[in-house]
Length: 448
Image (cartoon, rainbow, N blue to C red; front, side):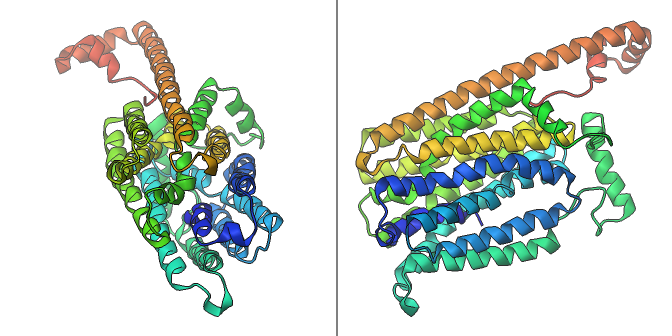
């Protein structure tokens, strides 16, 4: 499903821009307009999802409409037509990624969520890779079939596949732990108890909670604003993904070879990202598992800025794409840092991911054709975005560390007044220090 957003770049190589008589500015607008609807639509979509009892139907229904809209892109005749399709594509896509992340957070504990979300993100990256191979096959073999341009076939076929996946997911996706019908009563109870034990309270909203209470709680939390700034810069740093076939084309090969060469750089971050997420869950660490890979993106930009030789420039594409290995944990870190109540968490996920989309809107305009084939200004802007992502992530880490120390001190003060003698006796029996005994009784802590 994910190649729908990127199919436009492959279609450009197949003649979309010339057939629709788009100027470079109009083409950039076609790229950016998707995010103009995608970003604001995420918040109401996730707010609604939190109150929908059948998220399997809601998410799948949006995926089906997403596929239909993608297929309709193939019949567009001018700038206005394709602009309208991209707007609706953004609206329907808005339900998918933040909705899936939120649904996963309703089933998995904080130290299980990273790998599960990474599997979803790895699917996105491999879809970029196989989307390029798919596009190469269609653009290379179907020119003029039934009198239809190959770039139109690209949208027809990908749209049909997405509709099929949406129909299948209605039967395969679970709902929430308390109402998934194919689980037994005991299994549903265990699923709910696991989440309650992870944070120390049930993963449920108060019965009297109103629709907009979660929104108000989210916008009052300083952590949400820091995450939005981090994700904005992160999206700017990885905005090359919307122009990846174009960047690969600067190596000087034919359209088919260019699309084939655009595939491998996405396989590496998918594999690395899964291992990275597994280790992040195992250790409970977040900052270094994100920011470490953004340094790879920075290195990739530096190499690409300094040479136009084919081998090192192609290597730089691999390094730039490795930033996605860290990106897989971004929204997971948001969910980990705002675990309760679900209404607040759902809005925070959508808000942060939505603002990241704004970064993609800005990023759509920095890869100007007139700056090619070197794209030096584009890469300098994206490099600065990666650097600022690291800065904001470090600030978030410091904020969470400070909160953990505050909670630890409050617990120690409370325990020392109420249970000091009993805990001291237990420590002597276990042969451990008093500080270790207090630590073992600690409650919720943020993952940083």
